Amino acid sequence: MNISTQDVQHVAKLARLNLSSEEEQVFTEQLNAILQYAEKLDGLDTEGIEATTHVLHLSNVMREDVQRESLPTDKVFANAPEHEDGQFKVPAVLE
Image (cartoon, rainbow, N blue to C red; front, side, top):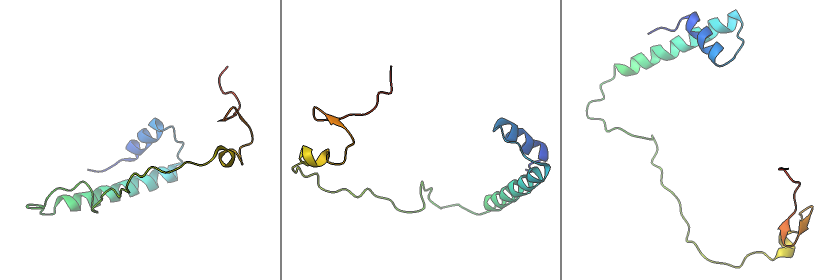
């Protein structure tokens, strides 16, 4: 499969990109190179290879959930520009 300059122009229009003719040509060449590489991968024998969702083994690193004392309010509000009644005071964003 090959990407034409018209395909690049169509995608650029959908993405609302203004591309110069030089950029269209460069992107056409780059996209075709990517597709040619993907075609090489299609030729690989993957029989007996287990499908993977990620190339690296990932696991969640969890710590024990330990209850501890929270910060005192004077330290919490020490750097706050404004606070009132134990809450941060911020400018209104709704009318």
